[in-house]
Amino acid sequence: MDWNFKKIDAHDIAVLTPFFGLRSNLTCDSVFLDSYLWKDYYDVEYCIRDGRAVEWKMKMHGETFSAMPLCRQEDLEYYFNDTKKYFNEVLGRKLSIYLADEKSLEILKLDPEKYEVIEQEDAADYLYDAESLRTLAGRKYHKKKNHVNAFLKEYEGRYEYKSLSCADKKEILEFLNAWMLAKEESDSDEDMESLKFEIEGIHNILDNLCELRAKMGGIYIDGKLEAFTIGSYNELDRLAIIHIEKANHMIRGLYAFINQQFLVHEFGEAVLVNREDDVGLESLRQAKQSYNPIGFARKFHVIEK
Image (cartoon, rainbow, N blue to C red; front, side, top):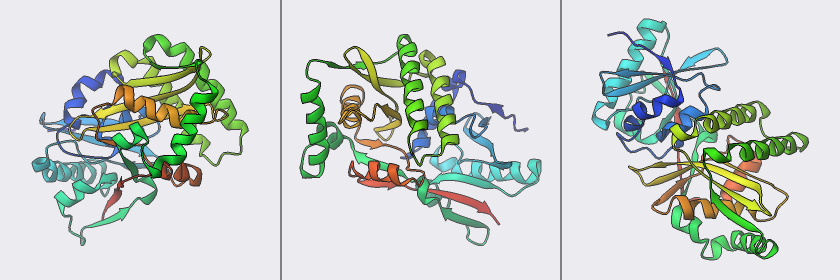
C-alpha cells in the first residue's frame, strides 16, 4: 500500500481528531490545533494508514522528519516501524522523529543499538494543576493573586471577559497587529522568525475558526480588546492546552487575569493544564515557572542509527 501524504488543512479536523484521542499523551501535540497552528512552519503533511493510524512527514531547514504516529497503544510499534519503512524505502534515508512523547518511548522500548534517543529539553511542556490556576489559592500563588487583585482594583467596572468567536475576528487582528508592533520595538529575546510563523498560524485559525472549534477568550477594557487566548481540550487526559496567550504587557496583572479567567470559563472540567514549552528563552522560562508547574511533558528526538 502506498503512502499518500497530504498537507494538513482546517477541513481535516473531523478526520484527524479521533486519532488524537487513541492513547494518552500529555504534550501539546496531543490535539489537532497544535499541528494546524504550525503547519506552515514545519510544512506538515499526514497520511492515514489502514484506517487505524496517522503518520506524519515534516520539513524544516532542508531536513525531512516525522512525529510519533497517532494510533492505539497496542498498534504503536507496528506504525512506528511502518514510518521507518517509508523513510528507508521511499525516501532513502534514516528515520528521524522529533518531539516524541515520553510515554511512546516507554511503550516502544527502542533498542539503543539501533536508535539514539536525545531529550529535547527546551521543548518540554510545562504542566500545571488546573484547579490551582483557576483559584490561585495558597502561598505559592500569592504574587499572582496580588497581580490579579491589582488589576481588578485598577480597572473595576471597566473590564469584561468574553468568549470569542468568528464574529470577533476583526478586533482580534487589530489587537494582534498592535501587539506585534510593540514586540518588534522591544528588546525581546524571542525568535522573531518563529513568532511571525505563530502569528501567521493564528491568522489561519481565525480564518477557519468555525470549523476548528477552538476555544478563545478575551479581556476587554473600556470596550477595547486588550488580551486574548486560544486553547484546546484533550478529553482523554482531561488536559487544557493553552496554545496562544497575548496581552498588553503595559497593563499590570492582565496576563495573570486572562490565564485564570480562560480556565474558569472555558475549561472548568480540566484537571491538568499544558502551557507548552519555553523554547529555551529565559524570559519565557521565568514566566512559566512563575505559575508553579507540577511537572513536565518531556519530549525526545529519535534518530535511527
